[in-house]
Image (tube, rainbow, N blue to C red; front, side, top):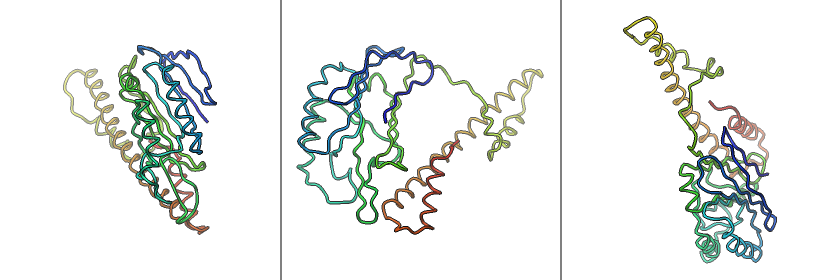
Length: 274
């Protein structure tokens, strides 16, 4: 399933959408963008000859996208054995076609945060294989337009493919984010201490000035506390994800105690994170 989401007051305009050889292409433009940009989403065949045909088609079609574009999807190929774990190692010559295609397209792969591999065959024990089949590539002008773009690789829990989320984080029209207190913080560890530390700061001046400064210091203390909690949560998610990958990779032969631990790990990963 493919979803394109617009957050905030982007005022995004969709110039058009097409399907070329079954693959969706979308033309978009938003505030602050100098030109139209293209999103192209692909599913490349597992058949070698069909895959080469799709590569040729994309190389010919690229001229229609202009200078600013991103292309993402399941490429069903890798560029080296470093992008594969388990199974039979491939010959170096087998990577040449995909590498040449990437070079001909003049595109750069976006780094992914999260899990390294994006696909697994869901087998157990020595039969388990995982590869980095899903990738996001961009043109040079796309990176100039969206220098803070991020790609996040969410570990799968049901499908054999992970979920890739890429966010442009475009700065046009964005001001400083206003502070707001989240009601869910009230029951979290450390929040009361942060409030007390901020409010008890000694301030000289009129009564109203003291109140204003105490609110300011309390806000800063809460922001520092939340940043620390968020950082610790990210570390916990990373550790739990690595443990879950180990469970899937080694197999458990219906050891129900281990199965229960696996389910608990998934629940923690999918649960709310501060």
